[in-house]
Image 1 (cartoon, helix red, strand yellow):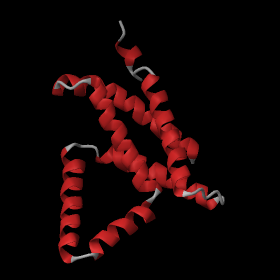
Image 2 (tube, rainbow, N blue to C red):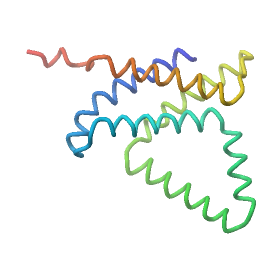
Image 3 (cartoon, one colour):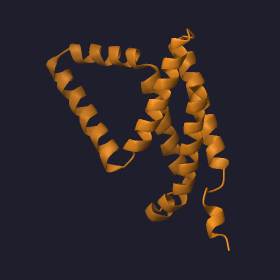
Length: 148
């Protein structure tokens, strides 16, 4: 499953490299900012999928402190998550990457390799970032069709 995660990251890296030119030209954005946004998104997805028990425990402790904190945290998560996923049209990328990370983590657990949360985060992040770097270095998949 780590190989599947790597190949998913390669495909996403290539996809983002293809979209980078159109997105940066349409929005007038520097390509460096585009890649910063995508890599932060990747790191958040890997973090949430690698350490869900630790993160949910901390959020539960904050929400258990008072009703006001429960309301604030719930509204913050729902509103920002909804705007992020629906308005920016990144739901498919997040779901694909999250599913691949969760499957790799499940496969590691199934075979009995259960590293601590932080080394697991570093390992899965390295696999994903390596795949994204390899995918962004690949040429456009249909470039030879239009070369004349």
